[in-house]
Length: 174
Image (cartoon, rainbow, N blue to C red; front, top):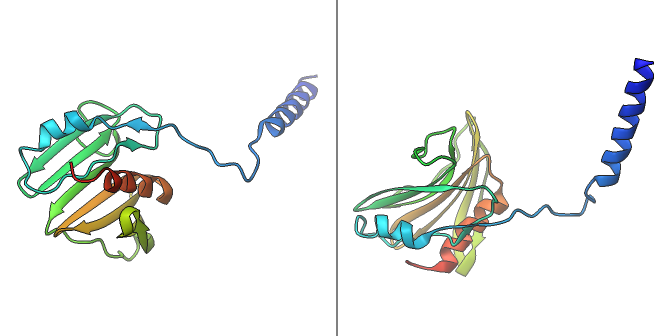
């Protein structure tokens, strides 16, 4: 009797799952999280002398805390799941950062899974890198006026990482 119940339940679950599966050509779309650019700028604008590029939104419906750090020649804005994370691994989703005189990423043997030149918004040339260690990180970099800008997304995909970078470029210098 129990085996018949299990078999019947499994069949019902299979049928229910099959009827709710997304078509193969459908694209799952995430909601966007608006980036509080005014609050972020208030924290870093007087601390750094480099042009600030921030995305207007992040392709995620998650709630984020935007923790910041800045020096005269750099800044970083962390997209964190908790208020006190400050970019540490478990509670961090990603970041956008910039460094005057920074170095562009290069392929790393045993780490790099994808490395390629890409076209970003405004005819901006960029690099996409996906590398894996303890977890994978999707990274987009571009250079402007001697500053290297970078968007990193933990366990991210190229499309969402490029979307964040394009949002920052399209918004322009803030």
